[in-house]
Image (cartoon, rainbow, N blue to C red; front, side):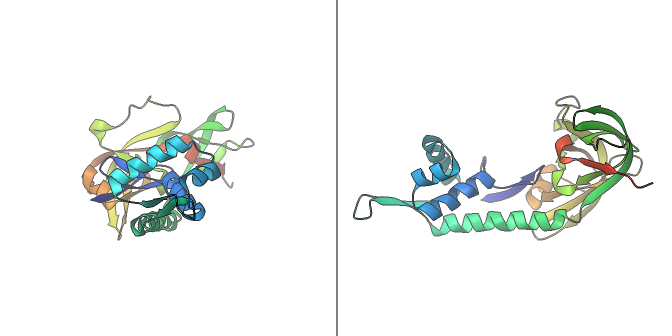
Length: 233
């Protein structure tokens, strides 16, 4: 059985067992399809042949036969995608397209003030608390935008520690709404002071986390995926 999942930063993936099929894997299969050779595909992508071969074996062990190999003969042999291989790439592209379309409408905007800067990154004080984000150099009054496809949800008992990485924002919150689509679920989370942010998950992820209205949840998102822009006076 293949499950679909998505991590923060719009890293959509298809999963089978413990193997995740992501953008790099789709690029590898597309390159094989275009070149007719795993060796040529590796060269085109600037990857090691041995690692590409090992990755392809891992994918086929999880997802089934994705390529057909021929050896020798007048054409010198080669590697082509199976129907299942092309179908897997198509499924992945549909998942990415679905996330992209929904992500455009799931942006939370919080007013804040920049209180600290370290290069392009800064700390913005908002009603929900301090948020690390990419900040403009010429103003302290900003609006912080958090896209739903950049937010990852965690079970409170299994969430990363608040100081696990200074590049990740972490907020404890409460689920206020769960809107289910065909493949993508929008989860609204109040992270404090009535501040809502959205997270985009797949139905599989929602079931795994047991997400429902009123549930406690931890939302996290990378500072580099969070942008502050000047706020109009």
